[in-house]
Image (cartoon, rainbow, N blue to C red; front, side, top):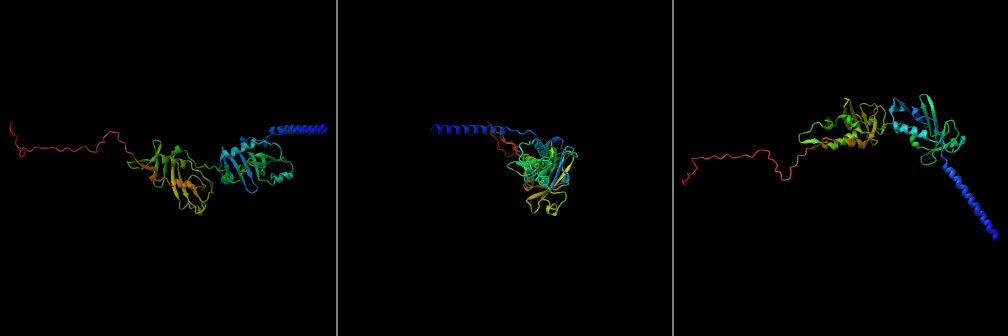
Length: 339
């Protein structure tokens, strides 16, 4: 009996030692914090970013403080999106390598020839860093390999943040305006003119006034107009621009006049916009154009309210009361008896 007790006690002690060892190893692994940067570059020094997916390439170039898409006739890119990506790339750390062999690099698609994305960062003509991005091991994770290294790492990065489609990088607010700079809006059946700092209906009757809330809604939609994508610089018959759905003009305080020409293709479920100061044609949401069409004179003008009478106050008549003048005819008046 004592022999079995000794054996069981030994097994229990061995289990306790093993558990302590595993916990210690787990703590050391969990406490590991990668500190070595995946890429060594200064985000502020980057003025060109090239992304290659093996079939298409896109180049984002910074000129005079603005990011442009070279493959789309230097159309403005969303600078905030570009700079957020650069900051995220600079903040990535290496961590534990997933693999270090050439076969693993091909398997994870981070090889020099086989990759999902190839990112190149430049300062002028000087290459700052190159990163190969491959398969995804999990949510918001991708396999990556810096150029010139054999180690493959798994880092936090989304594939949709490094697409090669221009529409994923364009500045969708490129047509937005400052509301206070709009001096005049000409719609099909009504014109709004800024008077004493406020946009008002230009030609209303004496018993009418501007519907201020509706004008503000129109101003918000027009000044904050967003595009969905760019359609190139050449008009196509399917755009239907020869038969516009809506025409309007905007004049700015600086004297610049902008013409908006919205048309509705038969297919696609979107509308096409050509603005006079831009060479590109734009795809815009159809519901936006329908909303702008709804701002008619009937909606932007309302009947002027008459002031209400105070309680107990008798409204003044429009004209003074007519009084009859009574005349006395002595010939017909009966004689009065003397007292």
